Amino acid sequence: MIPPIATEAIVDALRTVLDPEVGINVIDLGLVYGIEWQDHNIRLTMTMTSSTCPLGAYLRESAERAIRARVPDAKTIEITLVWQPAWEPSMMSPEARRQMGWRS
Image (cartoon, rainbow, N blue to C red; front, side, top):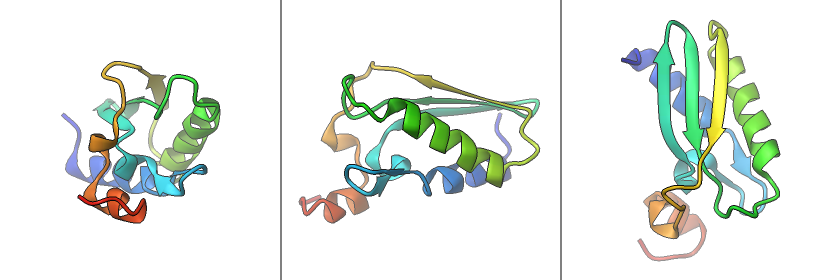
């Protein structure tokens, strides 16, 4: 189980990681599928908006840097990109949809 303070710190960190194509953070875009914490080791499962997205490495590196800055006691940070389930716009938060000019 993830301590609530660790979850909050990780999510807050990931809210600073913006997809440069749309300027919305990876949490509100719905790109983060899972966060695991065990013995100060963090495992993050995330996706991209498309399997052909050229920003995968950039977003992974940005996520790791952001988490390290907010959770300095993390021993390891493992970020895995997955393609199932495939990302779709319905995974975005209402705020992200509003920023895109879409109705909720």
